[in-house]
Length: 62
Image 1 (tube, rainbow, N blue to C red):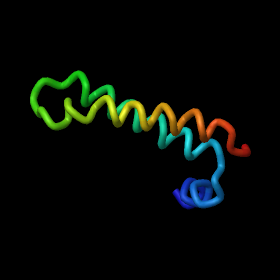
Image 2 (cartoon, rainbow, N blue to C red):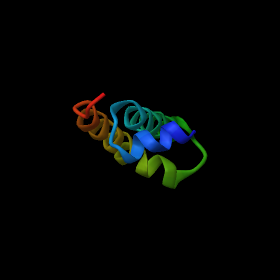
Image 3 (cartoon, rainbow, N blue to C red):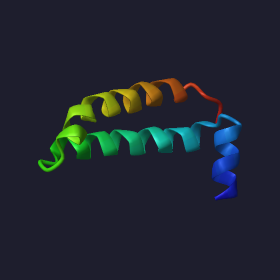
């Protein structure tokens, strides 16, 4: 856990890619659930932010 937080603070690729991937997964889940309308409404934005974030952090140092 400490190395994960340390990687986030040092802008390392691995931890930030994990955060971006989780954000994409949450966005897809929000898109496919039929119960909460606000989650469906913001699902595209969450998925888009995760995708753009993944593209940006893929250029971070290892």
